[in-house]
Length: 114
Length: 113
Image (cartoon, helix red, strand yellow):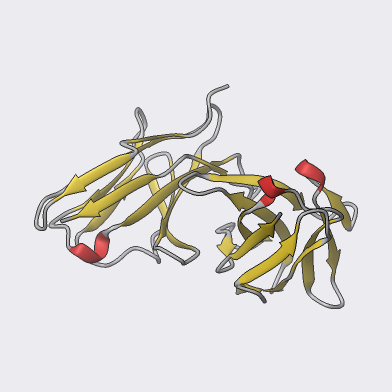
């Protein structure tokens, strides 16, 4: 069985400051992990993915995430927030060797203040 | 390469009517997933299909909801006798074989009056 917990429903930062969106997962198999972003009234866009290669994954728009097996975490970071980063972010786990049905976290709303 | 295409983008139905939502996956993708998103909530898995097969429908309500992915044509999510609680955004995603990586459409937003 697999699950994912996004620890914060809302994160508020000032433009130019670092972003940290937290995600913990549970998986019976080797997980693939993803972060997606959703802007209002839009579909979801893939930011980055981890599939058992390098544990530090770089994505689009300056985002990164680090897979930490010992902590079962896959937190999303960005050194400097931009106003256009304001959106909903979803952490997703999919089990390689399992059902391949990706499970979504509840989402974290990122608010960026000028 | 066109992305995942969903239509209609917006659909309004009265209680008791039927809603049909269509999804054309990306070229070369044989796996289709449907998710439902309620306001202020994440995406809830509904059904996972491959061509002509329902692989997992554990997230689908037992009544009124059905899905198909025929050999030819788009995947269809059908909701019969809609109720107000069916109002939501319905997202389709497609995936290449066995990767778990999802490519999403823009969603179909159903409003039940």
